[in-house]
Each structure stands twice: as C-alpha cells, then as structure tokens.
Image 1 (spheres, rainbow, N blue to C red):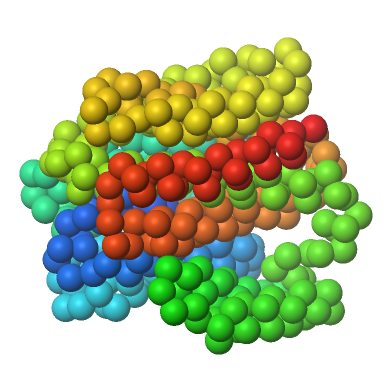
Image 2: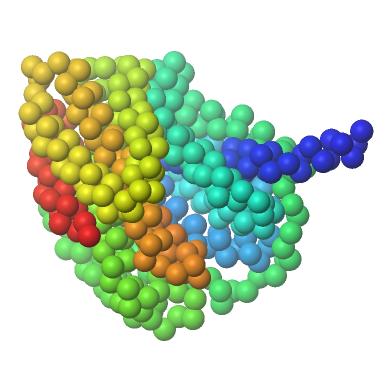
Length: 443
C-alpha cells in the first residue's frame, strides 16, 4: 500500500500541481494590490504617488530577485529553495496586515516579492529535470497557473477587500502556501548540493540596477511638483556605472554584448517593456478610477475588472493558433493595433458614458494583452538559440517588470492630485503615444 501511494505521488501532474500552487503566488500578489490601493491610501494617509510604491517595490524586488534565486536554486537545490521561498512569503503575509506604518508595509511587499521570486526558477528547474515526457504540456500548465492568477487577481482582491478589508489580500495566501509546502515536502525531488559560489551572483550589478531604477522612479514622481535633479543624477550615474560594470563581470545580471550582437532581440525587449507600461497603466489605473471617480466599491470594481482579465485569457488560445499557422508577426501586429484602438476608444469615454462602454473598451485592451504576451515570447524564442533560452527568458521577465514599474510612476504623476475622467484621459493620451511606438516596433 505504501509503495502504491508513493507511486501515485510521483505522477507528473501532482508535481506540476505542487509547483503551480507556489508559482502562482508572485503574479497573484502583484495584481491583487490594484483594487486595494485606494483603501491603503486612506489607511496610511497617502497620496497616489506614495501608494504607487507598493506596485514599484514589488516589481523591482522581483526583477532583482529572480535571476539571483535561479542561481541559488542551482547551488542549494531547487526543492530547498522552493520551500524557503514559501516560508518567506508566509512571513511577509503574516507581518503585512499588522504594519505599524507604510515603510514597514513596503518592506513586507519587498520580502513577499523576493520569496515568491524563488518559486518560479526553482519550479522550472524541477520540471525540466523530473518530467521527461510531455514536458511542454507541463510548462504550459504552469503558465496557466501564472497567467490566470495574474489576470483574476484584481477580481479576487476586490471581493476580499470588499468583504474583509485590505489585510485579507495577504491572509488569502496561506491556504496556497500551506498546501504547496506540505505537498512539496513529500513530492518534490530532493536534488542539488549545498555549494555557494559568490562569483556566480552579480550582487554589484544588481545593486547598481536597483539604485538606478529607484533614482528614475523618484525623478519621475517629482515631475508634477519640484523636479528632483539629484534623483536624475543618481539614475544616470548609476546607469552608466551599471553598464560598464556589467561589461566586465563574468556572470552579469544583463549581458550587454549579447544585446548588441542581436538587435532584433533588443527591440523585442523594448517593445515588450512598452507594451507592459501601457497595459499596467490600465491594469492598476482602472480600479483606482472606478473606486475614487466612479464611486464603485471594491467588490463591484473587481467584477468590472473581469472584462479586462477575462478577455485576455479567452483570446490566448486564438493567439496561439495564429502563431502556429503564421508565426509571431501576425498576432503581434494584431495585439499592437488592438492596444492602440483600445487606448483611442478610451478618449471617447466620459462621465456621461454608460459603464458598458467602458467594459467594451476594457475588453479590447484585454484582447490586446492576450495577443501581445504570447506573440512577444514566441518572437523572442524565434530569434535566440536553445542555449540562450534561459538568459533570454530572464531578460524578458525583466522587461515586463520594468514596464510595470514605469506604469506605476506614470500613474503616480497623473493620479497624484486628482482621480477623475480628465486625468484618465491624460493617461490615455500618454499611452496613445507609446502605442504608436509599439506599432512602429512591430517586425
């Protein structure tokens, strides 16, 4: 009987389920916060620019944490790191609801991001080594965990905040954490040695990257009032130092020579970063507008956001079918044009417009996201070798994070004093310019 149970536990779908329950925590927690921002502004007496740091700090910690955790997974073993990540997320989610001030809450968000950043690279490592047959289906299943949790995060967050206030978006993690941890203890393969090689981790480069991006965020958030010249100086000087440091490091965070040798891939990264800048302006901006300008509560806001999230998920199979038939170019152009059209339509929305019209606009924007995500990733893999897949995927995620960080800063500037239709239009006008760039970057 014991042998039969052990055999059942070793089935690939149970391994994928165990890993999926963990890897969904990062996208879920990155998106649930969107509906809670208004409540947190009131709780900690914040401007929207201050509250936008809850977005930026999570993506910044994720961008810095994922490459480090990937290498730590190789050194200490993916199972150890996976379970350690779950413990870190649990600690952050336990402390966050009792935050005495906003700075403490930011620290919890950063810890939550770092902990959840261990789960994806270590999970991918175990899938690639433990599942030899139908590995593509296993990776696709994990992608579904991540995409669905990110897409429906605002709706889940809206229900939780409306029913039990903002601490509930942290407590809701515990069923997933506990179940994944218990399953991981018995199911995940125990591989890897306890060997730490400091030279394999680019701490210096990552530190310069963080300093540079923080300088950029501070500079952007200061544009509405007194321009922070020192922040601009920090951004530029740390960015230059980062570039030269990375060119000399044996295992750099970002390998600039590779980007110079393959300009097509560089343009894909830039396009994907810009796509996410625009999309996340709506992903985080709409919940704030719906609550503070339109007067909807958190629960109804979460339901309305299904128009954006749902169509993103629904359209993904069609995007995949088009890629199989035509390659990445056709769906990439469709996604870029839909993003441009949706942004243009947003300028037609005003206070007299029915909610249904806004939901139609959100549906168009959601469909664009379904096309853009899959086509950009496919375009990337069409232009890199198999040996470069790992590092290219890491930079692809970094591009996503940078776009999300910049969207938080843009919203912090435009929504800082007033959240109304006029300022929503201002966001749309700025995003329309970026949409034109996105269309221009299509191959």
